[in-house]
Image 1 (cartoon, one colour):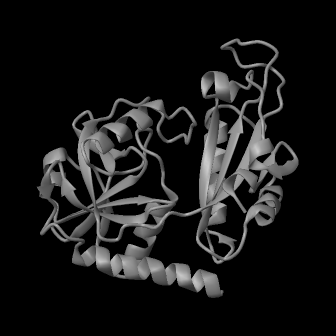
Image 2: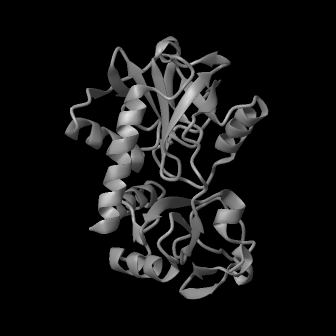
Length: 282
């Protein structure tokens, strides 16, 4: 089936992607007034579904939108859209909805717009990627998975323009996260990642990596990381729902470690893939 014809969900209807339309007066279009979530699917099953739905609730609460669907209803929609057992991901977006006129103030009564689609996950480059550090120019509520991603887009594009796959962001002298990922560094043998707060998204994959590290005897901490410390790290990883654990082999033009994926990444990659496999066969 062509991407244009794949089945999607929009406001109670299942229809081909090419037929899915929203109003130009939707506040998502006018203001970026909405949130989104990305859920990997392995073996036909949504990955860490409860955690993703909790984060969706948190994001919706953060912008004052009541969750329009129950967890059971979300799961029913996902089951209808998941096609086959190959690696794929669900993308869902909830905006405040369409309004009679453009006005910054939040309307008293409005039905949210709900959109869900499922797409294949692109191959993950396990050989590693290049990254650059950039000033974090985004807004101050990055813990909300909002659809207002213009700053992220510009930062990621600057990284691409410089021959890198990701921008690792710096705010007030500290590493926050990537433009579309969380950041880990191996510092003196300890897996280290910035703590949660308003300046970074609480990644589901990030949390799982920490959980698996603790379960497998890998020293891991959540603490601030300075730019100089990051540059001296023996390993740097990026984590996200669709890129899993991605090793960085070059930062700002200089090799990370020996310029190849490191030994701790290899160990945690095996642990992570084993965890996925056990979910597929459970």
